Image 1 (tube, chains in turn cyan, blue):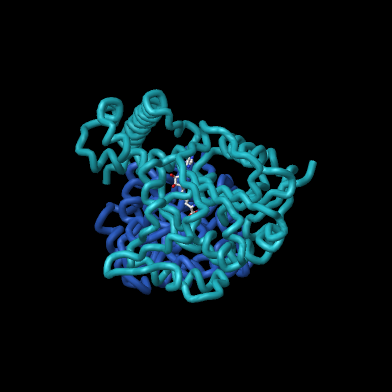
Image 2 (cartoon, chains in turn red, brown):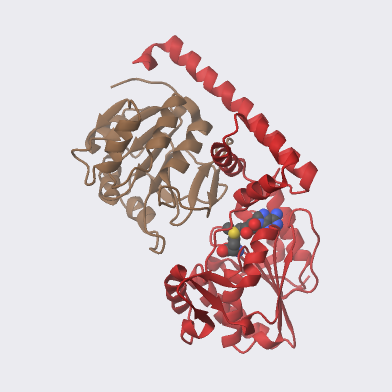
Length: 291
Length: 190
Ligand SMILES: C[S@@+](CC[C@H](N)C(=O)[O-])C[C@H]1O[C@@H](n2cnc3c(N)ncnc32)[C@H](O)[C@@H]1O
């Protein structure tokens, strides 16, 4: 048992720490290269998360060092697409956290009903499931026809999926259960046509949705949004970047606008906390104060 | 008992049978336990997370769900929320992510252990309890590589033996113990 011989154990530990330090530097250089060459800025993302994803790709790549990855990133744009997907985490589902949708249906939509026209922004919409869930709910509440939805993500590959509105049939059961838990008033099967492989959502859900590329770190504000939905995106950002992006949302909405975050995201520690009031605190639904 | 210095945190991974196992350990635990404890218990995604209150109600040490960006404090136990991976940053704050399942699990024990091993290096104690899969084996190996202390519940005692058995196979662990002794060992840390 080598470990109990203190000198060797100490040396081993020191070597481990040196390797780790060098690895962290290599990863930072890779992130820097992606930013300089392609403009995607991951410098203020969770380091532990970025590191796991990069090392994962590294193991799959068959390359010898992370620095070799940096070289490949600079000269091989297919490779960068892969890394971008790795770092994006596009995992999503329809009616994720059904109680959240219930809260929006009960506490937000009745207020939006009185507006002549409604603008909603889904930031970080991934493959679109969240957006179509909202569209279904708006339709059931008689609001969809007067709503414009902007659905954005910084990953162009995932936006293409979102536009298609086609999901593996294997996921429909789970979506159906969540739809019901979320207070859906019809049969979920009214909203799609299925073959043995996939389910395609009805085109009329899409009518008022515009999908577009938008990077929350580097792109600018939207105007006069009544409801911003940004769920499970901010958890990947450090506090400083979270604040910047919440500021962006704030500047995109008038007083009385709603902001919805993911179940584990909160405004509590944000410098912008004072500008909002919780509507349904537990579901992370907030309203911007009138100043 | 091995006397070792400067422990800074305990990471525990458990799966099938884990509720009872954690209850046993926490019932025995000293009220003045001096380290943060960070726990991943596999739990189905849509169950309410009642585990924190269940353990908190034992009135031993404070137990709560891990919050995003929270920094673990001495004498408090943190449990990964259902459906999120729990990662430790190098400044030791928590990150929660909704990424793909790892070893069919979210939260995954490997994700916690591998990141915690780097954040705490030889200040970490890693413990694998009962479970019916092999999550945590890689993470425990990493904890050992970083100089941390590794403990596995005796598979013979475990409600499900696969997870502790797999951990024993993956790593030359420091201690194989029954739950009562794991609690005793933790209480011997000053
Ligand atoms: C985990 S998904 C969340 C999807 C959905 N909102 C939900 O909660 O189910 C995170 C999404 O955020 C996107 N994202 C990450 N960083 C971004 C950025 N800087 N700008 C815009 N989108 C970003 C990713 O591409 C990914 O699709």
